[in-house]
Image (cartoon, rainbow, N blue to C red; front, side):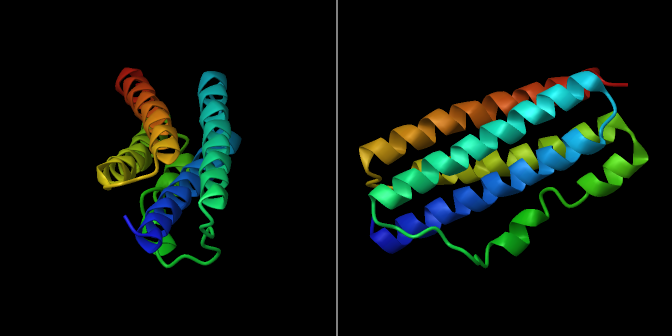
Length: 148
């Protein structure tokens, strides 16, 4: 895989992670349920850590993180309805939006993992993060299913 393609792929992941981090940070601030606050806080921190790991890999591969990426616009739609869900104070609606964001993140990671010839260090970072994203998705989904 050539550098440019790898760079685009990683920038896409970073954007997705930033989006999730912001989504969880917003949710954490606005949601009233203490357990949900804790969960959202954990995932916001997880995403921040993942961003650092990917940017670190990019640095090692001499790839520049994208400062003003054009993909951003589309990605933000994954979390766009979170604000109105938060305003409604409806935990289930909030969890629905978080799950949607997680669906998007899972897809981004699945796409990344299909890429050919990724450097092995990078691939193992992406695999590890994909595991974390999948766990987050399943946790959010089960919280949503059990919320009234």
